[in-house]
Amino acid sequence: QVMNWSGQDLPGPVVDKHSTGGVGDKVSLMLAPIVAACGGFVPMISGRGLGHTGGTLDKLDSIPGYNSTPDKRQFQRVVKDVGCAIIGQTDDLAPADGRLYGIRDITATIESVPLITASILSKKLAAGLDGLVMDVKTGSGAFAADIGMARELAESIVAVANGANLPTCALITDMNQVLGRAVGNSLEVAEALTFLRNENPEARLREVVLTLAQEMLDLTGLSGDPEAALNSGRAMEIFAHMVSQLGGPTDLAENAVLYLPRAPVSKPCAAIDAGTVSAMDTRAIGIAVLVMGGGRRNAASQINPSVGLTEMCAVGERVEVGQPLVMVHAANEADADAAIERIRTAITIGDKEPEHGVIIERIA
Image 1 (cartoon, rainbow, N blue to C red):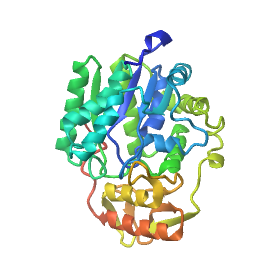
Image 2 (cartoon, one colour):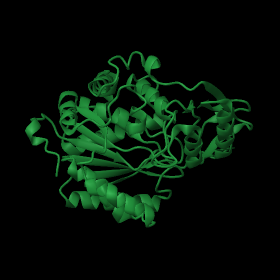
Image 3 (cartoon, rainbow, N blue to C red):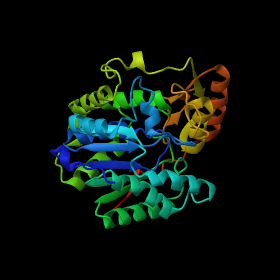
Image 4 (cartoon, rainbow, N blue to C red):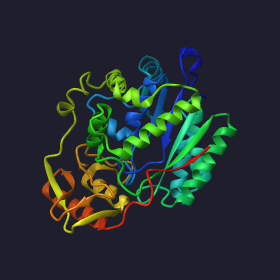
């Protein structure tokens, strides 16, 4: 059963983005309201984190009251009234996918490109979209660690989606370092809010968000300006409206500090060598947050939304001895110290500059 938007009389196209997942990937939180501010309607059905990659739903669940599983009628109403809604997988949208995933999990076929393609597109074709943009991550923090697999997956999804009359393109983006400055659920929501206020957003994160937004507009014939939507504050208004319409606080944008949970212990992870940050084991950084309680070891795990990292250094940055590489936010001192050791091992200080920018390739 395909979600029917024609009865909603939407004055613009229905368009979505799907990411294959990474560390610090809070792109959806800014992208959906930016595209909505440009005239698109974004019914984003997102997932939870598993393993070292964070899930958009877990980030939103750190907002008190936010209902990430509304019924279909409320979901469609919020999309129509606000312009976007980010929710979780529902039982009646591509129900067979959950069963297939369970089979893949026990048959060593999680990494099968045809089955990944089917899993992603079953949900996207059921969502009744006019256009889809894929963000296929590659690198140490991505599911597709090498560019070859990322390219194979991107080409497969683009070919199958377009063959099913869903206009689709893909960007291959770099996950050889954390995206943005924060990792962890409430901490990434806080970073998304500062981004939407346009308060010095991290450059790579900004490039990914605005490039994906432009691709979504181009694919569906919209002429809006993503940068203007951000600069004017319109995207922030839409995000705040979406949160309140789905049960969250009406004043989250102004008073995030009152609502987002904060960890009791904050400690810097200081550099023990001077030089340039030349590489990151992004997966190990994601695992450091998972072990602190910020992610799931299995589907039944409980998440601590307050733990994680902020003020993350970037590849190519110069650091001095004793300078913080990142701030660690943990439930207790022992967890903080263990995370500091993991992160220090995961960051290489040398003299090598990054090999390429954050947008690696476009596939259409």
